[in-house]
Length: 309
Image 1: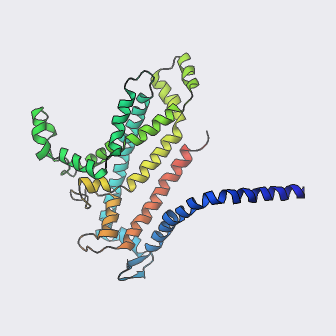
Image 2: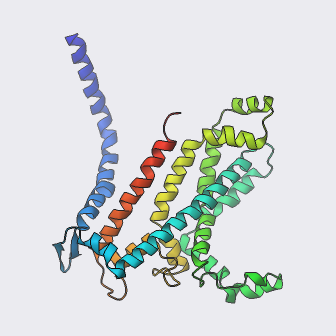
Image 3: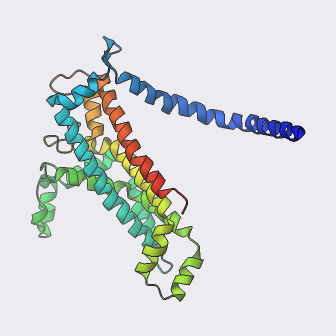
């Protein structure tokens, strides 16, 4: 028994020594570019000032100011609500249509499959600044008004991005349009991975296409649905470029499109009006709260969708 224990010990050590050179680069990359910046951000949230003028320890004062000082709390709660709406629109439109498109693209009798896949995925290959600027022109009544009037679509001529009630919806839908190709292709891969035996059995039982989707396809791709929902959640809480391209870093009009990402940029990097001086500590506090919000959303979703049935 003692000999076997020593042999197993050697095998275990040998396995670790064998795999360590392969794991080391990824581990170093993770520590340097992910773990250390996260810990540094948590540490920075407890300080005020900057490296140039000196920092001073303030404890949780940045968090208290963020929720009690009107100049900060009003902007933060507004950006948080807008980010949640931004995420809900993506979850319903981008991921919802992604499942629909993927289901259609995996139909055996569909003609022109490659063409449709290309059309859906092309916007993903374009730069956000370019698509944002183009859609900004298309939604501008000065540019698109005469063209729409020719086709008797005058009811669409309005300042979509200048109206605080429609600006966030328009920005969200443009973002959905650009990134819809990624979840669509992931759903396509998941659906194609389902065994044909399930569909043959359903066909024998006389199941309708809707029943096959709800009772076979959707349950079997639940892990992929959960993972895409998590990616959408994380990406939307870090969104910045689409608002920057279509509106500005202030989330015009009147902060109606202000997201957590744009608020963090103004406070921690550029300096928020009227002060105009960056506050890295306050920016780190916003990032820290966002990190815990992401954990509260990601962990339950992982447990609900990635567990064994």
